[in-house]
Amino acid sequence: MNPFTKSLLARVTDPALIEFVQHWDDLEALIVHVYRGGQATPADEAAHAHLRRRLLAAWPAFEARLAAYWPRTRIGREPTQEDPLAQLLAIERAADVVDNWAAMQTLPAARETLNLLLLDAD
Image (cartoon, one colour):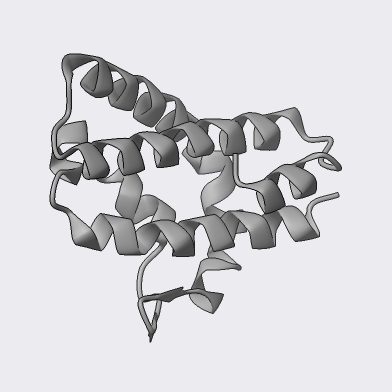
């Protein structure tokens, strides 16, 4: 888990938010793993499908809350034009991450969005 996110998450009491962030961390790690490895194994595909399903199930509870934060982020050097978490959740298969530089550039904006939400979480 991202160390800054981990420290922010330590003070969060909302179990649904904690679970969402933990699943997001797993998805982020999987995306990086597949991108760096240049291929998606059957285990990667299964893990991606599982994590995406869990995150999409929780998405309605967080989409509006996250919308307050993602416009403050950047992808590359440009202001983020679309929800970075939604962009990454739209990737249907782990294999779609192979050679997908746009997905890798979107990861930091998604992480920053989550961290901004955690900073304001009760």
